[in-house]
Image (tube, rainbow, N blue to C red; front, side, top):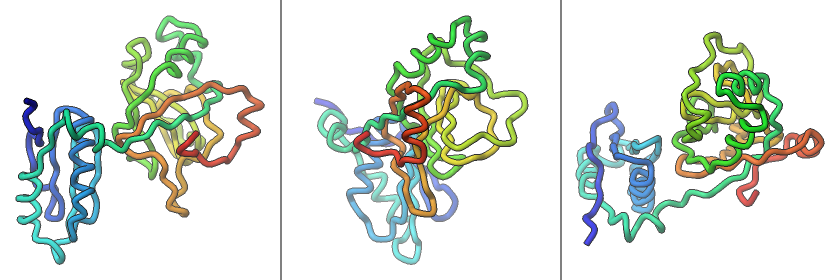
Length: 230
């Protein structure tokens, strides 16, 4: 009979949060979903990132010590709970693979550009965390043939919104123009986040699949919003 799963550690994160650590994303995602479903008054946010879950609390509404006891008592049976607990969705992001670093990545990996595109678009990625910019997804893992590239030695002062890039074992999409040091493979025409409208369709625990498109498709769909049912 499977044993209940709990975090390997729960530690204070400042004076208004606790950080629970797990060995892998699926366990962390299922446990985070359990915390959210409890809907405890005073819990202000539950943030999944890689194999950790941060639980934030308003101490005027819930004693942090009481929250810690509840968190330590919360376990799950992965065999029974994980399928129902992880609410992650798969999002398809169209990409025009014409990035400034595509040829460099191909040469570094001893591949041609077409092989790089096929490899990058041939994997369904887990969204491991959201950060750096609002709505910026860190997704992985890259296929081994593309993994291991360090960030560029000199970051670009401006990476356009929608840029799809890789570094290390991860891939990303820039939701807004910003400096950046990842290697640019292409760009999506879609808006993947709009902070002013509270539009953040991608969450940690979701999955991303990239779909190559032609230049005319890029122009046709420019500035469309990413749809959950893409």
